[in-house]
Length: 146
Ligand code: FES
Image 1: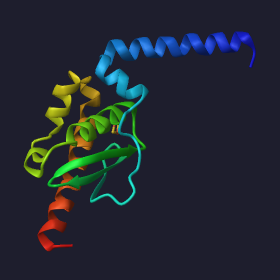
Image 2: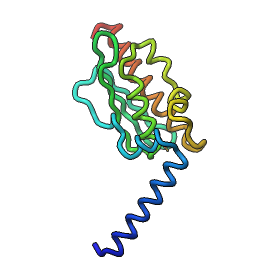
Image 3: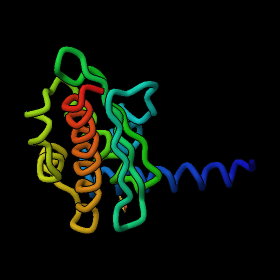
Image 4: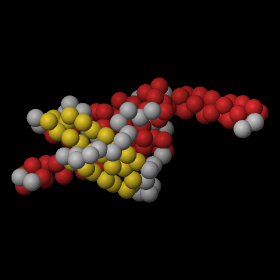
């Protein structure tokens, strides 16, 4: 790659980073750059998958130990905000029992992240709904003794 092109791309990346940090804030920016919980999980105790009305799909995986979430992760083929919200949903799930998990909503995610632009708020709903689906499946399995 020529030095000129390299410099151009570095400058462009710097601008994108600056704008993202300004528009989304530090917590969201950090998760957009390197979402801590973005990976699949071998043998989860629960798995939720939802495709939102935008067409993006999210998966959330949970492992429980002694009644609380010991591990949580997510993957998505969606937008940057879906990565931010999916990561936060998984992060928030860790250490929670089912009753506490039920309280994690899109509003919770938005509050923790410090808000998102209005056009991205549905991404928090996708993350929260996917988490709730994983929880529903877990509770269903527990109830049926599977
Ligand atoms: Fe689909 Fe963000 S636009 S989850």
